[in-house]
Image (cartoon, rainbow over all chains, first blue to last red; front, side):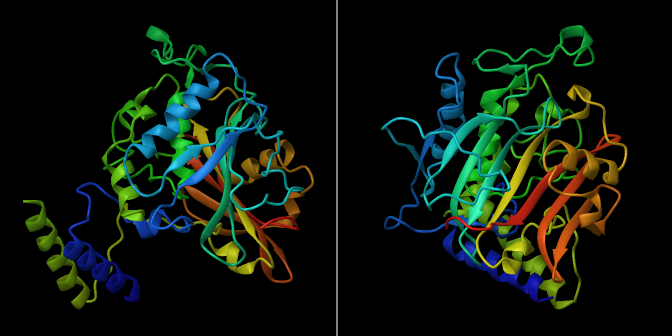
Length: 235
Length: 133
Protein backbone atom coordinates (compact mmCIF):
# COMPACT_ATOMS: atom_id res chain seq x y z
CA UNK A 1 0.00 0.00 0.00
CA UNK A 2 2.82 2.36 0.89
CA UNK A 3 4.49 1.62 -2.41
CA UNK A 4 1.29 2.25 -4.28
CA UNK A 5 0.72 5.61 -2.64
CA UNK A 6 4.33 6.44 -3.42
CA UNK A 7 3.74 5.83 -7.10
CA UNK A 8 0.63 7.99 -7.02
CA UNK A 9 2.47 10.80 -5.28
CA UNK A 10 5.27 10.63 -7.79
CA UNK A 11 2.82 10.82 -10.66
CA UNK A 12 1.20 13.87 -9.19
CA UNK A 13 4.58 15.50 -8.73
CA UNK A 14 5.43 14.82 -12.36
CA UNK A 15 2.08 16.22 -13.42
CA UNK A 16 2.85 19.40 -11.57
CA UNK A 17 6.20 19.67 -13.30
CA UNK A 18 4.80 18.63 -16.67
CA UNK A 19 7.81 16.33 -17.04
CA UNK A 20 6.24 12.92 -17.53
CA UNK A 21 7.27 11.55 -20.93
CA UNK A 22 4.45 10.13 -22.99
CA UNK A 23 6.18 6.74 -23.17
CA UNK A 24 7.94 5.78 -20.00
CA UNK A 25 8.16 3.01 -17.48
CA UNK A 26 8.65 3.84 -13.83
CA UNK A 27 12.11 5.34 -13.50
CA UNK A 28 12.21 4.51 -9.81
CA UNK A 29 11.73 0.85 -10.72
CA UNK A 30 14.14 0.61 -13.61
CA UNK A 31 16.77 3.09 -12.46
CA UNK A 32 17.50 1.99 -8.91
CA UNK A 33 21.00 3.43 -9.23
CA UNK A 34 22.05 6.81 -10.50
CA UNK A 35 25.08 8.93 -11.03
CA UNK A 36 25.45 11.53 -8.36
CA UNK A 37 25.66 15.19 -9.10
CA UNK A 38 29.35 15.83 -9.59
CA UNK A 39 29.37 19.02 -11.58
CA UNK A 40 26.68 21.51 -10.69
CA UNK A 41 23.44 20.44 -12.30
CA UNK A 42 25.27 18.27 -14.81
CA UNK A 43 25.89 14.58 -14.27
CA UNK A 44 28.58 14.32 -16.88
CA UNK A 45 30.79 11.26 -16.59
CA UNK A 46 34.04 10.53 -18.36
CA UNK A 47 35.10 7.29 -20.00
CA UNK A 48 37.88 5.70 -22.05
CA UNK A 49 38.60 2.52 -23.90
CA UNK A 50 40.98 0.00 -22.48
CA UNK A 51 43.76 -1.02 -24.81
CA UNK A 52 41.99 -4.32 -25.50
CA UNK A 53 39.53 -2.72 -27.96
CA UNK A 54 40.71 -2.94 -31.58
CA UNK A 55 41.65 0.44 -32.98
CA UNK A 56 40.51 -0.32 -36.52
CA UNK A 57 37.59 -2.05 -38.16
CA UNK A 58 34.85 0.06 -36.68
CA UNK A 59 34.92 -1.32 -33.14
CA UNK A 60 35.51 1.98 -31.44
CA UNK A 61 33.23 3.95 -33.73
CA UNK A 62 30.31 1.64 -32.98
CA UNK A 63 30.87 1.95 -29.23
CA UNK A 64 30.68 5.72 -29.67
CA UNK A 65 27.57 5.37 -31.82
CA UNK A 66 25.99 3.49 -28.93
CA UNK A 67 26.74 6.10 -26.29
CA UNK A 68 25.64 8.89 -28.60
CA UNK A 69 22.10 7.53 -28.55
CA UNK A 70 21.83 8.31 -24.86
CA UNK A 71 23.68 11.62 -25.01
CA UNK A 72 21.39 12.84 -27.76
CA UNK A 73 18.33 12.44 -25.56
CA UNK A 74 19.61 15.60 -23.91
CA UNK A 75 19.30 14.79 -20.22
CA UNK A 76 21.88 16.07 -17.69
CA UNK A 77 23.40 12.53 -17.75
CA UNK A 78 26.06 12.86 -20.43
CA UNK A 79 29.07 10.73 -21.28
CA UNK A 80 32.28 12.34 -22.46
CA UNK A 81 35.14 10.34 -23.90
CA UNK A 82 38.34 11.80 -22.59
CA UNK A 83 41.57 11.91 -24.49
CA UNK A 84 45.01 10.94 -23.30
CA UNK A 85 45.31 7.35 -24.46
CA UNK A 86 43.67 4.14 -23.38
CA UNK A 87 43.58 2.58 -19.97
CA UNK A 88 45.66 -0.53 -19.58
CA UNK A 89 43.18 -3.38 -19.75
CA UNK A 90 41.43 -4.41 -16.56
CA UNK A 91 38.30 -6.43 -15.83
CA UNK A 92 36.19 -5.46 -12.87
CA UNK A 93 33.92 -8.47 -13.39
CA UNK A 94 36.87 -10.56 -12.23
CA UNK A 95 35.90 -11.65 -8.72
CA UNK A 96 39.46 -11.09 -7.59
CA UNK A 97 39.27 -7.46 -8.65
CA UNK A 98 37.77 -4.72 -6.58
CA UNK A 99 36.22 -1.67 -8.12
CA UNK A 100 38.62 0.97 -9.41
CA UNK A 101 38.71 4.53 -8.20
CA UNK A 102 35.41 6.33 -8.55
CA UNK A 103 34.95 7.84 -11.99
CA UNK A 104 37.20 5.37 -13.80
CA UNK A 105 34.80 4.15 -16.50
CA UNK A 106 35.74 2.12 -19.52
CA UNK A 107 34.81 -0.11 -22.42
CA UNK A 108 36.82 -3.26 -23.01
CA UNK A 109 36.96 -6.30 -25.30
CA UNK A 110 37.51 -9.60 -23.57
CA UNK A 111 36.26 -13.00 -22.51
CA UNK A 112 32.87 -13.24 -20.84
CA UNK A 113 31.55 -16.78 -21.16
CA UNK A 114 32.62 -18.24 -24.49
CA UNK A 115 30.53 -18.23 -27.68
CA UNK A 116 26.80 -17.70 -27.24
CA UNK A 117 24.76 -16.84 -24.17
CA UNK A 118 26.07 -13.50 -22.87
CA UNK A 119 27.47 -11.43 -25.74
CA UNK A 120 28.16 -8.23 -23.77
CA UNK A 121 27.75 -7.08 -20.24
CA UNK A 122 28.02 -4.04 -18.04
CA UNK A 123 29.48 -4.05 -14.56
CA UNK A 124 28.17 -1.42 -12.18
CA UNK A 125 30.02 -0.49 -9.00
CA UNK A 126 28.28 1.26 -6.15
CA UNK A 127 29.61 3.36 -3.34
CA UNK A 128 29.49 1.49 -0.05
CA UNK A 129 25.95 1.06 1.18
CA UNK A 130 24.47 3.52 -1.29
CA UNK A 131 22.48 3.56 -4.51
CA UNK A 132 25.02 5.84 -6.15
CA UNK A 133 27.12 4.65 -9.03
CA UNK A 134 30.86 4.96 -8.62
CA UNK A 135 32.00 3.49 -11.93
CA UNK A 136 31.05 1.19 -14.77
CA UNK A 137 32.73 -1.03 -17.28
CA UNK A 138 31.25 -2.42 -20.49
CA UNK A 139 32.72 -5.61 -21.95
CA UNK A 140 32.23 -6.89 -25.49
CA UNK A 141 32.57 -10.67 -25.54
CA UNK A 142 35.63 -11.46 -27.61
CA UNK A 143 34.50 -15.08 -27.94
CA UNK A 144 31.75 -14.13 -30.37
CA UNK A 145 32.98 -14.47 -33.93
CA UNK A 146 30.15 -12.76 -35.79
CA UNK A 147 30.10 -9.14 -34.63
CA UNK A 148 29.01 -6.65 -37.26
CA UNK A 149 31.24 -3.68 -36.58
CA UNK A 150 29.99 -1.70 -39.56
CA UNK A 151 26.99 0.54 -40.12
CA UNK A 152 25.39 -1.56 -42.84
CA UNK A 153 22.77 -4.23 -42.37
CA UNK A 154 23.70 -7.00 -39.98
CA UNK A 155 23.54 -10.38 -41.74
CA UNK A 156 20.24 -12.08 -40.93
CA UNK A 157 20.81 -15.45 -42.52
CA UNK A 158 18.60 -14.75 -45.51
CA UNK A 159 16.09 -17.45 -46.36
CA UNK A 160 17.55 -19.79 -43.79
CA UNK A 161 17.35 -17.35 -40.89
CA UNK A 162 19.76 -17.92 -38.04
CA UNK A 163 19.39 -21.67 -38.05
CA UNK A 164 22.54 -22.25 -40.11
CA UNK A 165 24.64 -19.75 -38.22
CA UNK A 166 24.43 -17.01 -40.83
CA UNK A 167 23.34 -14.26 -38.46
CA UNK A 168 25.53 -11.48 -37.17
CA UNK A 169 25.57 -9.60 -33.89
CA UNK A 170 25.16 -5.88 -34.32
CA UNK A 171 27.80 -4.08 -32.28
CA UNK A 172 26.21 -0.63 -32.56
CA UNK A 173 22.85 -1.84 -31.26
CA UNK A 174 24.35 -3.91 -28.50
CA UNK A 175 26.51 -1.03 -27.38
CA UNK A 176 23.45 1.20 -27.25
CA UNK A 177 21.96 -1.44 -24.96
CA UNK A 178 25.00 -1.63 -22.68
CA UNK A 179 25.26 2.13 -22.36
CA UNK A 180 21.66 1.98 -21.16
CA UNK A 181 22.89 -0.05 -18.21
CA UNK A 182 25.79 2.34 -17.77
CA UNK A 183 23.45 5.28 -17.27
CA UNK A 184 21.82 3.35 -14.44
CA UNK A 185 19.11 1.10 -15.86
CA UNK A 186 19.86 -2.11 -14.03
CA UNK A 187 16.75 -4.01 -15.12
CA UNK A 188 15.67 -5.03 -18.57
CA UNK A 189 12.20 -4.46 -19.87
CA UNK A 190 10.34 -7.68 -19.33
CA UNK A 191 9.89 -10.11 -22.16
CA UNK A 192 6.18 -10.25 -21.31
CA UNK A 193 5.82 -6.46 -21.56
CA UNK A 194 3.54 -5.65 -24.50
CA UNK A 195 4.84 -2.08 -24.74
CA UNK A 196 8.47 -2.98 -25.27
CA UNK A 197 9.48 -6.61 -25.80
CA UNK A 198 6.34 -8.57 -26.59
CA UNK A 199 4.46 -9.75 -28.48
CA UNK A 200 5.46 -10.11 -32.08
CA UNK A 201 8.64 -9.80 -34.03
CA UNK A 202 11.83 -9.60 -32.01
CA UNK A 203 13.13 -7.22 -34.62
CA UNK A 204 10.70 -4.68 -33.16
CA UNK A 205 11.97 -4.86 -29.61
CA UNK A 206 13.04 -1.82 -27.64
CA UNK A 207 16.77 -1.39 -27.11
CA UNK A 208 16.58 -2.32 -23.42
CA UNK A 209 14.98 -5.75 -23.81
CA UNK A 210 17.05 -8.57 -22.34
CA UNK A 211 17.45 -10.71 -25.42
CA UNK A 212 19.10 -9.87 -28.70
CA UNK A 213 18.08 -11.64 -31.89
CA UNK A 214 20.87 -12.19 -34.37
CA UNK A 215 20.59 -10.09 -37.50
CA UNK A 216 18.66 -7.27 -35.85
CA UNK A 217 19.74 -3.64 -36.30
CA UNK A 218 16.72 -2.20 -34.50
CA UNK A 219 18.48 -1.50 -31.21
CA UNK A 220 20.80 1.08 -32.74
CA UNK A 221 18.35 3.84 -31.88
CA UNK A 222 16.25 4.25 -28.76
CA UNK A 223 12.54 3.63 -28.74
CA UNK A 224 9.97 5.59 -26.75
CA UNK A 225 10.18 3.70 -23.49
CA UNK A 226 13.98 3.54 -23.63
CA UNK A 227 14.35 7.30 -23.78
CA UNK A 228 11.21 8.15 -21.83
CA UNK A 229 12.24 6.12 -18.79
CA UNK A 230 15.74 7.62 -19.02
CA UNK A 231 14.33 11.15 -19.05
CA UNK A 232 12.29 10.30 -15.99
CA UNK A 233 15.44 9.20 -14.18
CA UNK A 234 17.39 12.34 -15.11
CA UNK A 235 14.84 15.14 -15.55
CA UNK B 1 -4.25 16.11 -24.75
CA UNK B 2 -1.38 14.50 -22.89
CA UNK B 3 -2.06 16.43 -19.72
CA UNK B 4 -5.68 15.30 -19.86
CA UNK B 5 -4.59 11.70 -20.22
CA UNK B 6 -2.24 11.96 -17.23
CA UNK B 7 -4.91 13.58 -15.12
CA UNK B 8 -7.30 10.74 -15.86
CA UNK B 9 -4.58 8.20 -15.12
CA UNK B 10 -3.61 9.83 -11.84
CA UNK B 11 -7.25 10.11 -10.84
CA UNK B 12 -7.81 6.45 -11.58
CA UNK B 13 -4.79 5.50 -9.52
CA UNK B 14 -5.98 7.55 -6.59
CA UNK B 15 -9.38 5.89 -6.74
CA UNK B 16 -7.88 2.42 -6.96
CA UNK B 17 -5.43 3.20 -4.18
CA UNK B 18 -8.23 4.41 -2.00
CA UNK B 19 -10.10 1.20 -2.67
CA UNK B 20 -7.10 -0.81 -1.53
CA UNK B 21 -6.32 -2.51 -4.83
CA UNK B 22 -2.88 -3.60 -5.79
CA UNK B 23 -1.95 -3.78 -9.44
CA UNK B 24 0.60 -6.15 -10.91
CA UNK B 25 1.61 -5.01 -14.35
CA UNK B 26 4.51 -5.46 -16.69
CA UNK B 27 5.89 -2.25 -15.23
CA UNK B 28 6.43 -3.91 -11.88
CA UNK B 29 8.96 -6.64 -12.61
CA UNK B 30 10.30 -8.98 -10.02
CA UNK B 31 13.33 -7.20 -8.61
CA UNK B 32 16.33 -9.49 -8.42
CA UNK B 33 18.33 -9.75 -5.24
CA UNK B 34 21.25 -8.04 -6.89
CA UNK B 35 19.65 -4.90 -5.51
CA UNK B 36 19.34 -6.18 -2.00
CA UNK B 37 22.96 -7.20 -1.76
CA UNK B 38 24.24 -3.67 -1.36
CA UNK B 39 22.83 -3.48 2.14
CA UNK B 40 24.60 -6.67 3.09
CA UNK B 41 28.11 -5.78 1.98
CA UNK B 42 30.72 -4.47 4.36
CA UNK B 43 32.18 -2.46 1.52
CA UNK B 44 31.22 -1.60 -2.02
CA UNK B 45 29.12 -3.82 -4.22
CA UNK B 46 29.07 -4.57 -7.91
CA UNK B 47 26.49 -5.88 -10.33
CA UNK B 48 27.00 -7.58 -13.66
CA UNK B 49 24.13 -7.29 -16.13
CA UNK B 50 24.38 -9.31 -19.31
CA UNK B 51 22.97 -9.00 -22.82
CA UNK B 52 21.85 -12.40 -23.94
CA UNK B 53 21.69 -13.69 -27.47
CA UNK B 54 18.28 -15.16 -28.26
CA UNK B 55 17.92 -18.91 -28.42
CA UNK B 56 17.55 -19.15 -32.19
CA UNK B 57 20.99 -17.65 -32.68
CA UNK B 58 22.69 -19.18 -29.68
CA UNK B 59 25.72 -21.14 -30.72
CA UNK B 60 25.97 -23.30 -27.63
CA UNK B 61 23.78 -26.11 -26.29
CA UNK B 62 21.12 -24.74 -24.01
CA UNK B 63 20.72 -25.39 -20.32
CA UNK B 64 17.42 -27.16 -19.82
CA UNK B 65 17.04 -26.22 -16.16
CA UNK B 66 18.12 -23.32 -13.98
CA UNK B 67 20.28 -25.68 -11.93
CA UNK B 68 22.09 -26.73 -15.09
CA UNK B 69 22.53 -23.06 -16.00
CA UNK B 70 24.07 -22.43 -12.59
CA UNK B 71 26.51 -25.30 -13.13
CA UNK B 72 27.44 -23.98 -16.56
CA UNK B 73 28.03 -20.48 -15.21
CA UNK B 74 30.24 -21.81 -12.42
CA UNK B 75 32.22 -23.91 -14.91
CA UNK B 76 32.66 -21.11 -17.45
CA UNK B 77 32.89 -18.00 -15.32
CA UNK B 78 33.32 -18.78 -11.63
CA UNK B 79 35.28 -22.01 -11.24
CA UNK B 80 36.28 -20.78 -7.79
CA UNK B 81 32.74 -21.54 -6.64
CA UNK B 82 30.77 -24.74 -6.13
CA UNK B 83 27.14 -25.43 -6.88
CA UNK B 84 26.67 -26.43 -3.26
CA UNK B 85 27.65 -22.89 -2.22
CA UNK B 86 24.29 -21.64 -3.47
CA UNK B 87 20.75 -21.89 -2.25
CA UNK B 88 17.72 -21.22 -4.40
CA UNK B 89 15.96 -18.19 -2.96
CA UNK B 90 13.35 -17.38 -5.56
CA UNK B 91 11.78 -19.27 -8.41
CA UNK B 92 9.03 -18.74 -10.93
CA UNK B 93 8.39 -20.40 -14.27
CA UNK B 94 10.68 -17.88 -15.97
CA UNK B 95 13.09 -16.65 -13.30
CA UNK B 96 15.27 -18.40 -10.74
CA UNK B 97 17.61 -16.77 -8.28
CA UNK B 98 20.42 -18.31 -6.26
CA UNK B 99 22.34 -16.81 -3.38
CA UNK B 100 25.59 -17.62 -1.65
CA UNK B 101 25.23 -16.94 2.04
CA UNK B 102 27.97 -16.26 4.56
CA UNK B 103 27.03 -15.77 8.18
CA UNK B 104 23.42 -15.44 7.18
CA UNK B 105 24.20 -12.65 4.73
CA UNK B 106 24.10 -12.84 0.99
CA UNK B 107 27.50 -12.19 -0.56
CA UNK B 108 26.80 -13.34 -4.11
CA UNK B 109 23.52 -13.53 -5.99
CA UNK B 110 22.98 -14.80 -9.48
CA UNK B 111 19.75 -15.07 -11.40
CA UNK B 112 18.69 -16.88 -14.52
CA UNK B 113 15.85 -16.31 -16.96
CA UNK B 114 14.15 -18.65 -19.36
CA UNK B 115 14.90 -18.02 -23.01
CA UNK B 116 12.66 -20.26 -25.07
CA UNK B 117 13.33 -23.75 -23.74
CA UNK B 118 16.65 -22.91 -22.15
CA UNK B 119 17.95 -20.98 -19.16
CA UNK B 120 20.60 -18.28 -19.28
CA UNK B 121 22.17 -15.96 -16.75
CA UNK B 122 20.60 -12.54 -16.46
CA UNK B 123 22.53 -10.74 -13.75
CA UNK B 124 24.77 -11.25 -10.76
CA UNK B 125 25.68 -9.21 -7.76
CA UNK B 126 28.50 -9.49 -5.27
CA UNK B 127 30.20 -7.73 -2.42
CA UNK B 128 33.55 -6.26 -3.37
CA UNK B 129 36.42 -7.55 -1.29
CA UNK B 130 38.93 -4.78 -1.02
CA UNK B 131 39.69 -2.10 -3.56
CA UNK B 132 37.88 1.08 -4.35
CA UNK B 133 35.60 2.78 -3.74
